[in-house]
Length: 489
Image (tube, rainbow, N blue to C red; front, side, top):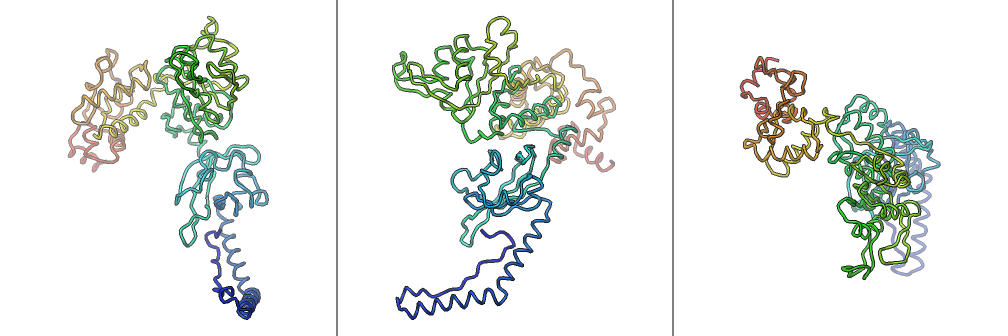
């Protein structure tokens, strides 16, 4: 595989002596090869190749970004000095080896494109967490570029990567991270949860997620699965609270034909389907004590039997469970087995209700409004005073209730701008909604003086992507008024 900057191959265009089959033609070709090889060594061709290669290596080895290249079989052919510094591995340990074998958990983790057939892509860019030789986790930004031959066939890839661990840590401290793996928020509690997800993603230990309904427990479970090495396998969710006990057992472990009335054929259970991947047991606090015993065996031994069968099946799954109940109260009152809890809760994650991170509401609203706009095909905007009301509401149903309220308002508003009176009545007519100047939206517009503020204008322009006409609508002023304010700033 030729790397960028390396010399091209030499074409000698030798005649094929087998065509004529004459010995004299064979001798001519042999002599020609001998002459060309002598010329290659004696007339400077070799020196030119070596110099060209040395220049390319000097350039690549003095870059601050790590460079790694491998062929289509994942055999590493190049590893520069910066790559050694970032990963802690030397060239001698890396070059000539399969990148899946020399790096713990594969160099690109679950984002690897070379786990199956040779992929078809030109370039790709993504963040990835790598494990260094010393066992440290480093956050890197990866740019992968395919290398192709003269016929356009892929011969390998060159990847450049830079260490952004410090940058990400600083962004974390300053609260600049607004989302992670599809989860929106930059509240301190959410940033800690993002760190927990990264920490447990590549470890098989069971995770126990607690939180009220609508806080996004399944989103966290999906993020743990997708960020880890099991992402290539299935993520299998089961709502334990939605199924009666006899159906839940069949759903989890499967059944054989004739096991019960209606079992007309063999069926695989969710544990069998999730083999190698992740099973998510939602509302785990609702299962019966009898089912808890059967679940405990799977966690302890990794084996189970289908309903109506005596054959033992072994499974390798990662278990993530969740509940909206106070599980310690359930244990105290004898409704949940303590030994099962300790099997499930090796790593607990507690999700805060939306009312405890009201500062995230503008971010979540912005994300939901964009999704509603895409789903309906109509551009929807929301006024600052409406956001202020949303931040003042308690949201006992959390993000799910907020989403429903915005969908209601999007249907009710006619001109594409959601105002307070478009919200559901129980939210819009709250008696406690006396807006004070410390609230988010009130700080944007000085309504007492009926004047625009720089912060209000900047926020509105950001929300509308710099469209002044739309920003004027959000601010409730005419375009001319907004233009004059901007010109006089």
